[in-house]
Length: 272
Image (cartoon, one colour):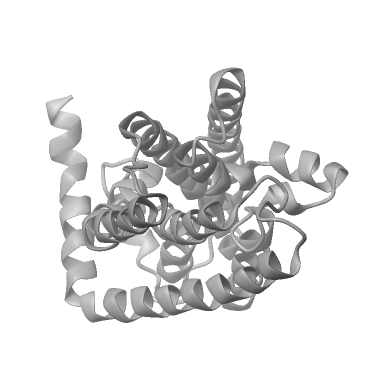
């Protein structure tokens, strides 16, 4: 085990150093996401004001505020850039040198990719969560923070990140066929925002569509962890949804290996 970490930890250190070099990008991206949250806050405030009661589809306004901020933070934390890394290495030819190294390609990409969530956990998640919990405590007049829900959220969030990573790895392997993924990546990000419940809670969607989206792996990315944090999933429902996350993680790992075995035969290096 020690040998394993000695072999792959340099990839994480390199990823952290690379991310910190452009820390100003994280700050401005965080500010833009914060602005988005406040815009959506007033949109949903108008929706609740226009509704007959204080409860809309099982959510009150306090729930909606918590959902908005935590969904964006979670999407940010579980975001993987594996597809971009693969596409860039194929584009500049550096993948050839990576494949010559005595390391597993998938694991080396994973250890480099986890640098982002590690940094974002401290720079974004912790301060944002503290602010949201202060807001909840002030509006409710009591401490609303649930340590157990937070721990379960973090566990679910780790699984969500791994699901996101392997989903993006599968997507990134398209670069072996189309070379440049930029346009397709933009479409993927917009589609995932809707399918994962980041734009609109799945609970607000028609029952048939909600059931389909809840089963697909996209709900595992942010919707499931946030619903756990909010205490909406408990007991059997909690076990079912975390189990679904684990199922999709295993399925995507297998799919990733299958695609890799076929895609590597089509490697065409342009640079290098």
